[in-house]
Amino acid sequence: MDGLTAEALRHLDKALTHEPNHVPALIALSNAYLNQGNFHEVEKLLKKALSVRQDQSEVFFLNARLLVLQNDHDAAAKSIDEAIKLEPDQPKLYRLASDIAKDRRKSFERQLFLERLIDLEPLDGEAHYELGKLLHHPDDFDRVKLLFEIAIDLLPDDTHPMFSLAQHLYVGEKSLEDGTISVQRETESAKKLLREILSITTRQSKAKILLAEIELKSDEELSATRLLEEALEDKTTKGEASYELGLIWEKKGDAAKALRYYKSAMEHEEWEALGEFRLAVVLLGKGQGKNAGKHFEKCISSFKKKEKYLVKSKDHNLEKLDFQASRKELKSLQLIRKCLGEANLGIYKCNYESRNDESFTRHLDEALIHYPHYPEANYEKGLWHMQSGEEENAKARFENSVEGDWNHWPSHLELAKIAKIGNELQKAEMHLKIVLDLDPENKTASTLLKKIHKSSKK
Image (cartoon, rainbow, N blue to C red):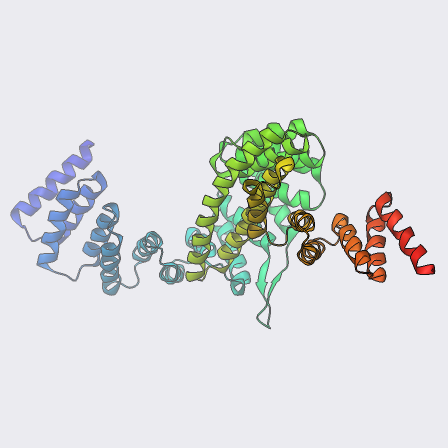
């Protein structure tokens, strides 16, 4: 405690000695002790002030602050409501009320408090920014855009509103007059904002990640790679940057570099499962089935935990009417389930010689439970049915496979064989022509097609 504060406290104590019910002194002393963290003294002083009179909004405001610091947010909400009733045009009351509503996860209440705060203080850039982040419905696209633009003007030294606007423009979800949702990405505007952020500060690594994502969609791989490599320098984005770089090098066929980046991603909790999954895929492609299988097993356990979390989070966001967040969670959930399907099929392939063993066919069934339209898993299940003499079940699986991916020529080939056995020569010919269109050097398809043509001439 510095000398000035100590002296001020002595004067306030002296004033209360002469006049114990002096509310302004009680308020001032409460505020001083609150800033020092002396909650016990604050409680006594505020209790005294409220016993004297209950028409001072500042007393309820201080009491709300105290309750927030004591993590009693419901009681704090009641206290700040009382303060607002007494002094409805005081901006700081709505600012605290907004923070309390945030802690209580009362999004609509918070929205109302922020809107009122903006009415009272139109130049409060932080309020505009917070309200923009709070609104998620596609109906609010233009309003959110305007709020972020105002926040950028009012907070010229803060790049966060600029980044939020870039994200908003890139997502581009807006409602049409017929009630449907349209995605109209303003990619160039988003890129311009992100580049402006990076011209102001090179520390905004999230801007680098988003710009890299946009560049990859535009086939600007070199620029994206450079941005991701820069993002590796920041611990908060290193995991994601490593994973994305792994994908780039895997796609380019450089297994060594891909593995290095996936291992780096695995060092970060949020990216551990995805990094391990992709690492297993690369190892399987290199013929290291036994090693790959171990990694598939580990990532499946992590994916299942993540799946449970995302289901709860998605439903929670729906309850809050946060449709954008719910769609984002659904997209993540779909990715996790797709990975679960691919990882289970990976284990099945790692043990292909023992594929008839029930412990491994279970993984094939698991793959289809999590990813029902997975072409490769449907194809493998179809082969399993053929081996078991279940031709109709096999046919259904091969048809599911080509519905999921029309270019999956192995399934077309099997459908051609089944059609030929059933003397459906026209259908068999169609599937064989598709195979040869996708894989012109396929000798099996060429031979079968020649046999069909010969039999047709007889």
